[in-house]
Image (cartoon, rainbow, N blue to C red; front, side, top):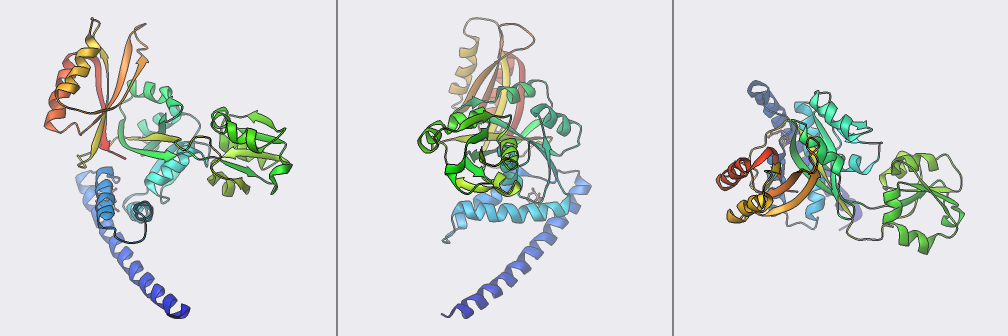
Length: 353
Ligand SMILES: C=C(O[C@@H]1C=C(C(=O)O)C=C[C@H]1O)C(=O)O
């Protein structure tokens, strides 16, 4: 077929797609009107999860499931903004990994607000200045972000969703020749994650640690012969060239983020529940609690302990399990755990990533 004919067909399909997307948008607007009278949240993560699962099952095209999900994330984002435009706080600065995670989860039709601390994110969501917040919770190489876990102990906010992001670093610079780089700015963790690449690819460069890798990109954009190790999206934000991509030493470098808010999610069919508790002070207390999970055949996906800030040498345990707390088995198990512990709290049930 001639190029012209192919393009004519593509244009015709685009017209059909536009018509269908417009019809979808009208329906979502109607859902928004129903929600006002029933006082329901705009963002329903369990419904969005079901939409994605359904599309993945039906996808027999040459497009990957990942591409389908990212296309529909944007369609849903634009439609959802017709109900109410959402405000989402993330751990900044702009172009940080948390910013990327927030865009991956909510799409771009959202008001994103950069916050300079995890505290500020919790504060803004608690006070309704933001509808949701995005906070890092654990990294495959660095482990859990204890500051985020500690915040849950004293907050009424719920975990409404989770997202995993592959952490990939790039070397960004105003220069276009890697040999002219004399200085590199980055966060200490990013330097650690790219250590071998730096040794093998750059000789006699000065490494300067800064508070974040998007700040590193900003500094480098004002300084000749310098570069930054940053997420690739910082290149367009600070008008830099991408001198090298995927320079991290480990292939498996991912960070998991929580979306925090006030939703109480219904089951999506494929959920996780996060909870915290302190075992009572007696021999075998933790063993007894873990045995409850074993007895009910409940799978644990994360366990982490943090000092209980109220009493010295006592600990709060944070646990993630598979299943939704409305599920009968989970309900029974959690009731038993509540009776065998103190400070018990369900932090949320949310669709698995
Ligand atoms: C339309 C709804 O509202 C939002 C928008 C959705 C969509 O565009 O499909 C899905 C879930 C909600 O986050 C809904 O709740 O069904």
